[in-house]
Figure: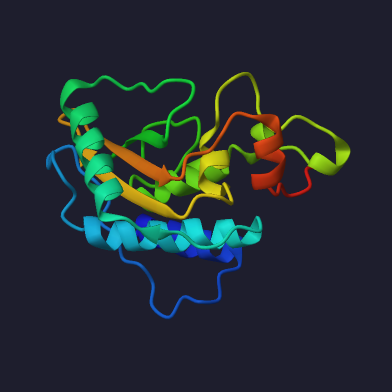
Length: 197
């Protein structure tokens, strides 16, 4: 029920009017490690959420690429099995590790699903995106935050992967193509930031 409420709350937050039926997603369970049973529904919801967020930031919708999806799934399964959670400062993927138990205190509380990870990446905007008209920095340091990859205008394709760990977390990976770029000129061209007060 919490999963459904969070999904509906997210749709209300982004003002998405295209929802004809609610996304009923199964929260992950530490008792069921491996690929989530409803991964297809989670991927569909994540694509809808991500594309609506892209629309709000002046970017065209992404399409699913089977190769990127397979790579993202392989990466999620690797992270879940090895518990090695890292990527370089410049990488083509976003990833999140979310506790399956909603009772666990989280820095960014989100539902343990692929769309929950997408929502988590949107929360980076106050810290990582500033209004270019005010000549403020888009990036912090040399990293490309998940928000930037998600709304990068030049990106056309995405693939989502997810796997549940034996210790009760879901690992979500999103791969984008073409990749975001650290170059400030490319960022100005490919990022349309919402105004931050």
